[in-house]
Length: 374
Image (cartoon, rainbow, N blue to C red; front, side, top):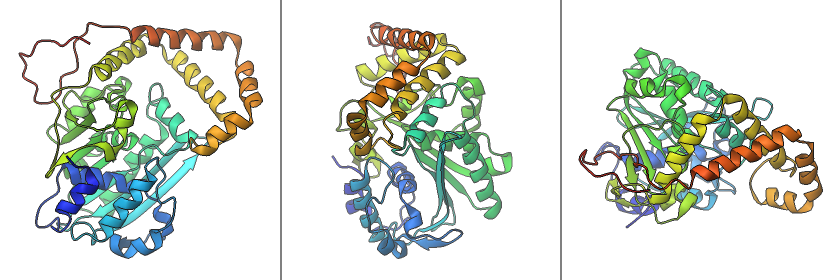
């Protein structure tokens, strides 16, 4: 068993024009959008991974929770015949607390002339996590609009170039949304869309109709204990990947196992993951839009009282240093809103006790399989 770092040691000497892109390569290219490219890439500039690496050797190189492994990945990529000569261009990154949006993307130029558009997932910032939560009741969120505009711009700047689109976590959601809502001229150039454990699209935007526009080109992968990738209306077909971590930690792409050019498949979701999927969908269908907004707003009012802009160590230090501020934020919440938040959380907990439901069907599962208990 091996992860994407081990894959690079095995396959890194074979250029992409010798062995074409596969689903493991797609995850690596998706993870590249998590890097602080402003360290080495000037606006409107482009450069190869090998050329960029000397200026990228600083911490934190990544905006996410996997900075240590991201540095190892970047080091291996820059010295790799498979990835070292890939050119990075069109880097854009912005975060706006007032608009509750966090967005970043890069264009990666492949040796066959195709471009892989990589959308950044959720970073460690509170504003990034709040926008993720806003997916449940606000459609589209600003990052989705930005992703659609970015893909359209890449389509204009590089006419007639084939396109791949992908991302991990929220980046996977942005990849699906941008590709499905693109003009037909851009959509016809799509070779594939990779969603790695990203939340699904909202039913409010007719998710299934959008997925249908990507029929045959959408590749959605989730770990066996997925939580994030099963939120909202996820694609009907998906690949269940083996992770060596447990619970929510399976969201970490470095825990995913690969064997050769493909991920190690699991026959089905774990019991806990399937139970959460059913419970969350049922709960969400019964909570109206106003209550979703109240729940999310209240939770983040409390979190922001820590005084930290991110969920890194400083967040927990802020909580320990400012318990009075956190308690004050709780007291400031309207009593009726506080009651509604408590009720909604209790309802969600109650739904999690559901034991007998049919699990979602992963891609490739025979139709005559008996329903599994949850």
